[in-house]
Length: 594
Image 1: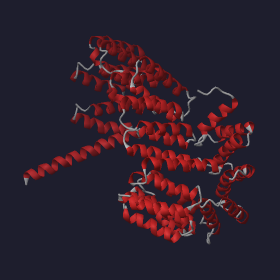
Image 2 (image 1 turned 180 degrees about the horizontal axis):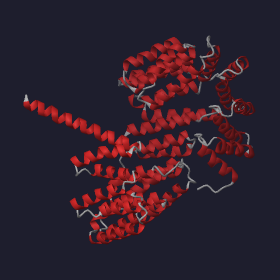
Image 3 (image 1 turned 180 degrees about the vertical axis):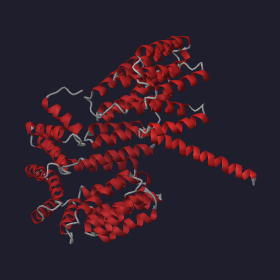
Image 4 (image 1 turned 120 degrees about the vertical axis):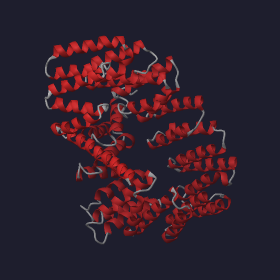
């Protein structure tokens, strides 16, 4: 019993002590220094070896202008630890706070004199100066420490000092030196560099880092420089330059194609199809295993299909599919390509009947449960295309049951929500979307959130939900490639529900369809109308940017395009289109873009 009581007493003491530490810190953080000092005094008396108690007590005294108490505290520490030179920095700074610069400087000189006898203490002393923001003295100590012991890693400390002093070029150099000394620091350096680099290739810091990396790559080839250049170029959306670096990396490491697949995806998303196809072609030509080759070919076909806008291009895609089937067959290996082919037949060639036949055949050769679920997903997509919504919902539900707790099951749930939305069953759609807010796939959760917001924002003032039903019908018609019918449906909506919350969404959706059907003047009118309704609205910067692209690419009006991009730069500085608008503006103005 006595042991149990002692045990409980011990842990109770620990608990009270931890409470006191937190309370002292909270007082310090709230600038209640006298209260903080009272607690830290007691904590420090009980544990004089705790440097944190000493530091916070010292700072509390100094913030209270209790410089005599601070001095006595430092002297007591000196008496206890006579070999700790950095305590003289504390004492010097205490005099500096009292405007006694002469005495402070004399102590700092003593520190530097003693340091020269013990250069191994460079880090401790340098950090003491750095903590008091005496950066020049800290820099001097670190540089002399590095000179005395070149093999030690002072670069991280030097980089921090240069960064605080605003010497970014020197900071980059120190960080890169650190990698050169020890490649294990790559992740640490990458994390620090990420704080200074932006997605603007014209940013001064980006230029400084790029220059240093290129020089190092020329003088002393190191795969780390290729990796950092690839990251920098990708961040700036210079994917063609990033591709060269990734190919160089693969040639040296030959470990994985994952970065090349990612680069291709990002390039396609930013409309750099040329680089995207080059990346996938390199993977296809280089890969030794069939799975990787099939994946590369599948993605090439997907983007080729996506970019096919006319009959000739669509026929080229058909030919590409047939070439792949001739090379790899129609077995389990090419299931992903056969599913994609069914998608192509439905949404590009408007032949859902043949697509369903393809899926029936591929289901016979698919070996895994997951592949069979993918086939069912595509079959349900085609059922929606054909207007057979209830059958589609049943099929999507089967996928959920077949591959529970997988990303594909979440995809099926999202498609159930979207199909319910198409049907006008908004309550059931919202029920499904609520579950998907916490989906493991960020893409799925984002899509779910966007659709949920669209529904929620537009049913509040419309009890019978007529406007949203019209909008959902237009989206369904768009999905079914009935673009003119979708345009006409949106025209009715805009006429009958002028001033409704969904008006800007309808105008934007209709503008996209006008562009798709090459009715560019009507698209221009819609984008202008969105800005006119509310230039601070959620779609105002989207409309402004799209107008810029329309003038630049379709209407061949360089001056108007520049005005739109300039508007993004000055009126929407937080827009996601800012960097691209700036690049396009400079290009149209005739600036030399690196």
